[in-house]
Length: 238
Image (cartoon, rainbow, N blue to C red; front, top):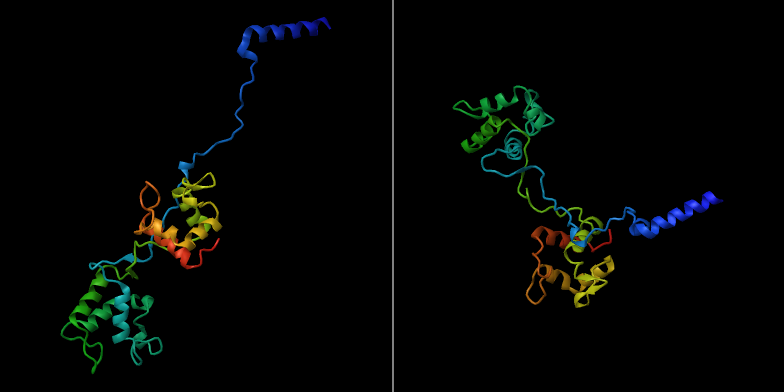
């Protein structure tokens, strides 16, 4: 009993004279508050299929068109006749061993024999293009005229439209700050603004509309195209 009383007295004495020693200190309970300005817009995707078109490159699609028009006909090198075991217009057999050498031997020079008479021999520009294609490795390259353009496929509200609007617009159009009476928090609220025409007019900086984001940089052409694509498909909550 005396011993318990002694330790209790000692504890109170330390608290009285130590002051700060007995004050409750806040504990770190692992809660992290993320400032709203750290919300990042989604990364834009660009078309990277095929190859960027270049006048210095010969593409297989052009070679294939020449071969199909002049060589892959019935009785010659189509898939049914397969003259000399060669199908021109099919990439695998066109590039097979010996086929490339045979092509150039038969379509070029003074003794060119293909296409057979009475069809005219290939123009020099087409022969040069085929030779260029072979010199560049006879690759199955596809020229994509839209290479590098904004990819507007698979634009969804959940993973693109909503994050973009939250990062660009919600600072002024949220439940606590409905500037212009506009709240852009939920899908329903965003769709309602879109249906009035105000949303697209503002982000496109169209004359007669208040340019948005207010005081910030205009959304990129790709971002606007993607939102427009989403709207064109019904502005779904997807």
